[in-house]
Image (cartoon, rainbow, N blue to C red; front, side, top):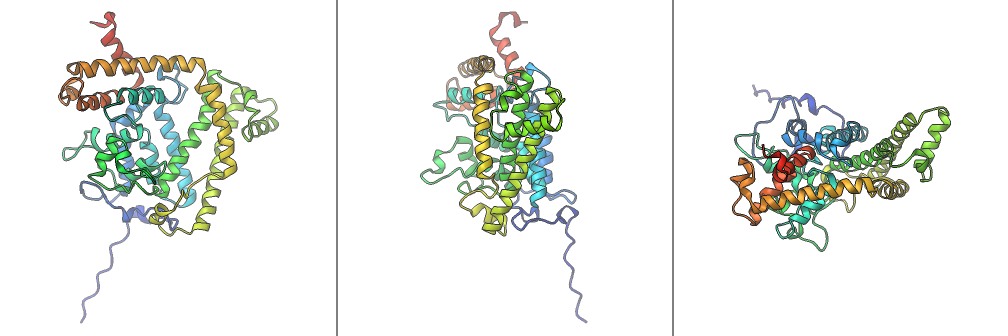
Length: 405
């Protein structure tokens, strides 16, 4: 008698989810740079999300600036709360579109890990300090954190994340190698990693990473309104002049005529987030129906993004960004703090580059000699990993005589 044919192994519980045809399939993951056994209870992207949450760099986001320096108040966003808000929005959108929620969440949680203290001011100052040493870019630093600087495993440096997660983090804002550019034009950390693993830097990222990128836009644009109102940098009445945003806040007042300012602001921001998410979902569904991708690879091969806002919503958001730049990001109180932050980082960089023996042991043993490119990168890694309060205190320890003891 013929022997019975063995039935294929059952699909894991985490794989039994209805997905859009163009979603990333965790069963078809391209794997990790360093081979390791798969988990029976978690998909590759669930494991990546968990590794990111347990990373030291993720915990440090709790005291890194979003807009306001971490010590200025307990209610303002930090990089950590912002990342959690981005992850929540990304997961919700991915679920609605039938994408892999865990991959979208992992990319969202990791996207800001490379940010230095003091927000974009810190990034600008570190980049200026690193001129002549390869520069500084927070996206490249995120890749460096994920693949080199997190030291949690005995067999390799970094978190050994799946290909799709690393690709999504690096390319969530679009292709890095564009017409007229080459790999040599990219930041050092990305060039170095590309020699070990091809992340297809000339294509768009998968759909989940595209969702995470726009979830970032939804979160920071609308939550900056909330933080700006809380800080008294502008009033709700000022927002009424804006297209779309003003309509939303007027509708809240019409529905709740006696509402106080705090609840008026909170409800307006909530509605703005919902409206932007609805627009994002509708526009993406329209593009998917028109372009007909049948796999994540098809999404990567498109000439433009699959996940997008409508043109009308883009115009509304451009108006909001102009308002926030004028009334919030360039406000003199914010500018003063940013000026202080830049001086702190410049002082730290210069003294450590000149005197690397002042670095803590982990970093000191990597430094080659004062003033070299290798030492500059070590100093940059050390400073980029600092929280706001730690950078302030480190500056005091090194430059204030009252901290000698």
